[in-house]
Amino acid sequence: MALALGGYFSSASGVFTGSLVNVQFWFSSRFVALQEFFTAPRDTITLRQRNAELEAEVSELQAQVIQLQQQVGQTAILAALLDFAQANPENRFRAAAVIGRDPSPFLQYVIINRGSNDGILRGMPVVTDQGLVGRVDAVIADAARVQLIADTASSVNVRLQNADTEASLVGSVTGDISLELIPPDVLVEPGDLVLTSGLGGGYPPDLIVGQVVNVRSRDFDLFQQATVQPVVDFNRLQVVLVIVNFKPVDITPLIPAP
Amino acid sequence: MRNLIAVPVIILVIILQSAVISRITLLSGYADLALVMLAAWALQDGVESAWHWAVATGLFFGFVSGIPWIVPVISYLAVVALANLLQSRVWQAPLLAMFSVTFLGTIFSGLLSLVVLRFLGAPLVIGDTLGLLVLPGVLLNMLIAIPVYAVMRDLARWTYPSPEVE
Image (cartoon, rainbow over all chains, first blue to last red; front, side, top):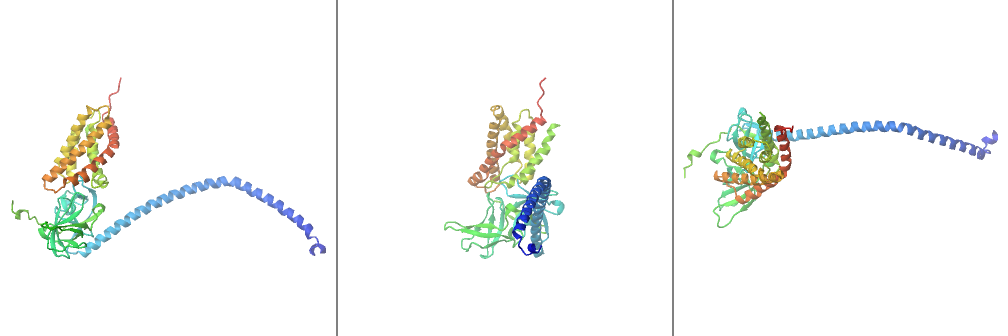
């Protein structure tokens, strides 16, 4: 005993315990391998079930995220429209959703989900928080058709804020808008703001229409022309405001017959 | 009684045209689903109500659109007339007839719209209108011609089942 504790048998005990450790390691590793062999298939099935559950949950959450993003976008649009309405207390607005476009590509019209039941009348101007959209062209009980200012048959009397002059804004088949009848002696520059003038009684004054992009002025032309970038993206209209307290003036009887 | 199927089909087509098709643009033009639907319907064997469909579709189209109602009515009647004319001549190749009716009908419809709108005072430029509206519309109509033809063929078989051979 004294010899063993004194370390004199260490080499002999080392051989013995080392063999024991090796044997135990052999049993242990085999047992673990067998345990994994029998338990692993059960875990795989459980994991697959859990994976399917989580995938379904992820799909559901992704759908919720898309819905919430749509609601956030809608809320942002409505908030902007509300700000616009509060900033213009002289006008009364009726919000409407754009539910379609004209079936014919020749016309730039949109269809909104408010009609005569909501107090919408023909000729009422239509705006967004950004600026002028157009005016109501036809109304039924629960819907109305709005002629955009980009329509070829549309003509809006406008004024150039910086140049302090008036002109006529017309549409085109491509949906672009341009200024015509600008006096030749007026200096018009890109970036000038275009606002409604209110002349003719078709639209209220001082609604923002767009900005001048470029000016075409030739010596032999009677008037200058200018291309205008509209502030409203007519292809992405979702919600608009109809100014319901504006009474358009029909000046047709005052125009002398040719 | 089976002619009543026209009512939901025409309403659905015009709603799809206004809400969906009109937002899928090529340049500034888009497809005319109602025109293609009528062409496909008129080319089906045994269908006798294509003229009624043309008038009803034209009137409903004119009601929704700002274009004068006479334009779609005449256009769609012309499409049905063209389909009946071609059906008797190229009856062995219905898809060829479908493409021909779609192509010619779309061009006729576009030109008629152009003439009428210019007559009413809209300052439409002929070159721009043809290049940006009519020709892209022709291409898009040709693209949807085959699927629309298949759908209308199934509808015609369901509505006008062929008599069983005894």
